Image (cartoon, rainbow, N blue to C red; front, side, top):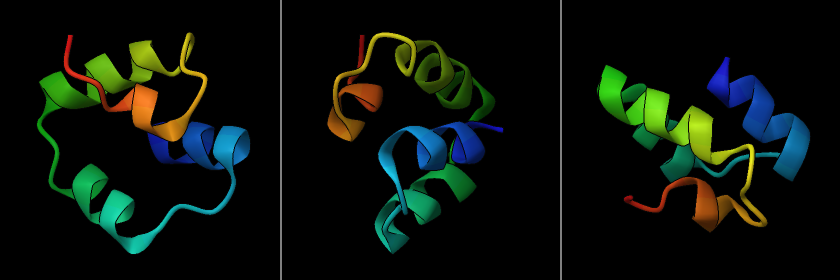
Length: 49
């Protein structure tokens, strides 16, 4: 679902981002999903809080 949201908001994702999503823990996926709501850029999504 996060992949779909990121693609819709920011366009095609690079291979590095796809790999990062594929290897992410559930905790990271949940955090990144929360971050997408306020993110102005793709980099903002992956910020550690």
